Image (cartoon, rainbow, N blue to C red; front, side):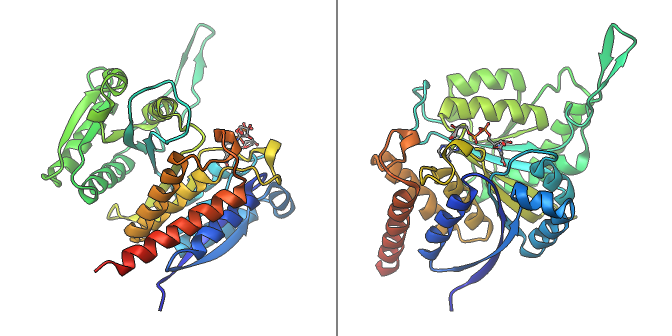
Length: 347
Ligand code: NAD
């Protein structure tokens, strides 16, 4: 019998329905059964149902433990912010790598996993004026999310052949907050003696990523640093809109409790319904989801096949190619099926 997994599908707006069809076509090419449980987060349904639609979403994601989210319009409320808060998604894992066929000004190859604490830093406090000539805001670092992110980063390193983990902060200046972050990173590093670990000052790290990108494999950072680093690295790799992320919540033992995967881009209203959407980012999100389910060979095949076809020039129009959403999807699904069949026949 084929292994079966429930996956919550958080349906979205614009090109969301086309991307969902593409995901189903690709999932049908896999030798496992992904049972999709849809929750309708389109703007129309959110307006009709009100905030109670999020109770349904939280219930479904908590039950299935993994979810794929399609882009949604941010209107009266931000679905991403609500889901992050309600599901306690405290860590964001954003792999950033050079994607063949995506134009970039940067000539070097980049392949970095950014593990970012999704809460705190300077982002949880909008700050306040002190009189008329000054303003102040709090910088918050909490032990729990830092430990969760650090354990996730080191576990990822161990799983991927003991890649190096670099923690980066401004611990020489922000002694209490960034000092706490670094001390937790070191505590967790001690539990993974086989994984190389070093600390960098965050400003120096930005320069070094540009000068010597191959020195960095997994980078662990506080919230705003992760925000800056993700956009810089995606800009270098040319994958600003083509990347995918995992948004993670953990149990008391810092083990992943739920994981929500999404594409970096938005709903692309200008091309919605025209069979022009590029499904690369959502396929990369699906690949990460398969890794999370423990289906690492399938996750690897989905990712490498998608990237190999792009390298061969099989691309949608946004990347200068001729393919439609459907024809690109059909090509990826057929090649995934072919590679999996070939691997099965190997002695
Ligand atoms: P966008 O990413 O939707 O579009 C920017 C440009 O990129 C457009 O020209 C679009 O056609 C193109 N594009 C985006 N994804 C594409 C794809 N898969 N294939 C081909 N072309 C693609 O950004 P925007 O226009 O600023 O935002 C539109 C809506 O998306 C807004 O309502 C915003 O709130 C929402 N949004 C949602 C998310 C999310 O849910 N994760 C993220 C960003 C934006």
